[in-house]
Image (tube, rainbow, N blue to C red; front, side, top):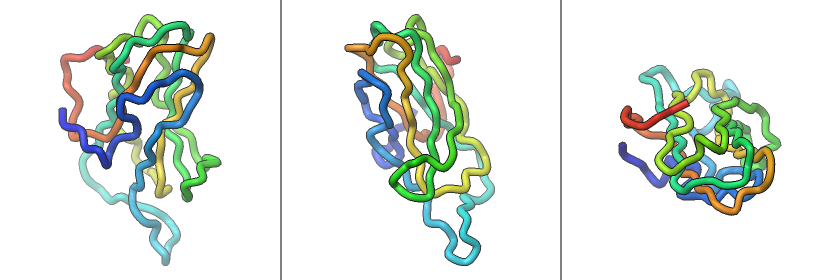
Length: 140
């Protein structure tokens, strides 16, 4: 699979507590006349969330896509992506292979990682928009 720095939410981001992805993706400007965003019709766009370092301690990790009309992220909309248990959070594990949902009507997006249980001292995630996801990984 091919990763693009401008399409990454997280690049080997250490998750040691509940946190937002280090990067925000700008899906494009809102139309000034109709005040909405429409990426247009086309093919599905894959979202990869992959563990690149084993996690420890936590009970589970929830991943949500947060959307907002500004970079302040109140957020305006939250879309659940996946929840993975500690046993699943091993290096190489693709914990979400979902496509970005249709109907994204806000300009900015980021991922939110919510830790349940004891805060981990190890565990890293790489996540972003990709052209396709390798099919030899195990996914939720």
